[in-house]
Image (tube, rainbow, N blue to C red; front, side, top):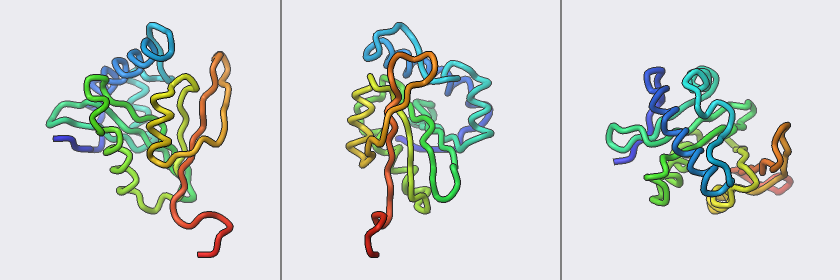
Length: 163
């Protein structure tokens, strides 16, 4: 049974292990590289930093950690989905959709969600767009030869429309 719980410091190694499997798999399959991922994906210390700085949930299948969700409160009812990841063995089963629904239901006060994903990650782009996220721009980071695609999802009344 899939469930979502706050991550604890003792989960840091397991969360790191899942991220390494997830992001290295994406890099091999879609990015044309043997390994790679966002900053800190392979660091236990980074997981601990993210738990202290953001809101970190672990995704569990029974008692096994199979993924994670990291949120950052940007203030003014704006949250950034810093990271969502799921072990490759569990992908394609609707768990990612459940995870997005979980965070949106848990934080109904949030009116603006933002995230980024690599320009080469067409599977991620389709996933986010299916869930109502809209591409709002691209950003080239130092040292990268591909852009990050920036996404946003707003809830509530559309801007500049009568309510």
